[in-house]
Image (cartoon, rainbow, N blue to C red):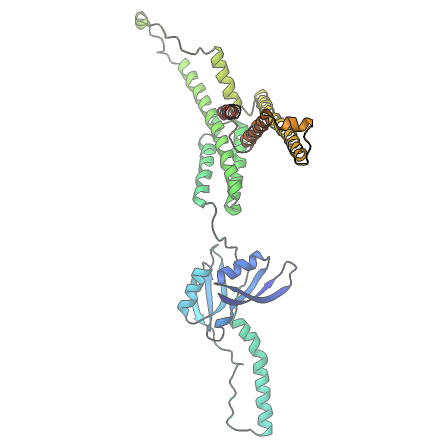
Length: 382
């Protein structure tokens, strides 16, 4: 551990100073940030009397020029410290010249009274100038606020750029085939992606990726439908669509397994509409909201019912521990069905909570949730 003396500004704008012990300059500056202090100067106390002041001219990670003074044993040490601890690109380094006001007063014998007074005056003048010069030499002086150095990037910028390029490609190449509502949603997600570069919030990034995936699926579906309509319209204009010379070779068209107007086809179309409603169709949006409200109300009802049964469970347990044996709650508590109901309600509420908060709201996922709960019921009541 090394000892560092610092000068900083508190949130009220007042200058404060003190000593901190860390392993290097970077940890010391990050600790100041965590305390809510704006760092003004920082110096290592153990090396003040051994080091030489150097003036440096560098460029920080943001590309802005930085100038200051730092003490070190050599120019190589200054360059290494600025590059490794602060991430600066060093341009020039040169030693700082000693002030002419700081001089060593030598006296071989007692001078006369007049010379003695003059020497004392020169010494006082030198000492009064020395602290300011020393403080300027022994500190790293910043002409602006130290940039915030994130200790570890949570989300790589390359991954964010790939997601942003995906959204930009949909907007630039397929904009004419996407509905207005989907375009507005993609533009909004593009702004959120730009914010993630500086936000670096892992939870927000996870939710944003899910939103982009959902918007991309809707956009691709709209693009396919638009291209299919364009292709069908072009086929209708094909002059060689019907050739009379080949009519005698016509074969019977095989009957599809699922007719286009059959019940199964209508059901599949309804499932697809629930998963990907058209944002420009008010009826489909309303149907999607009604479908989601059923799951929401089911979660609330199962949670309230589970809380009621759990309250009865603990009440019966308390009465039994108190020595009460002939009570209706005690008789219900001792039945296996009561405990099975509690386990069933707990599993239902847990699955519904996972479905509402973490799973994609699709018909396949909902079917898996229902099937999982039925399996749990079979195991509980077996």
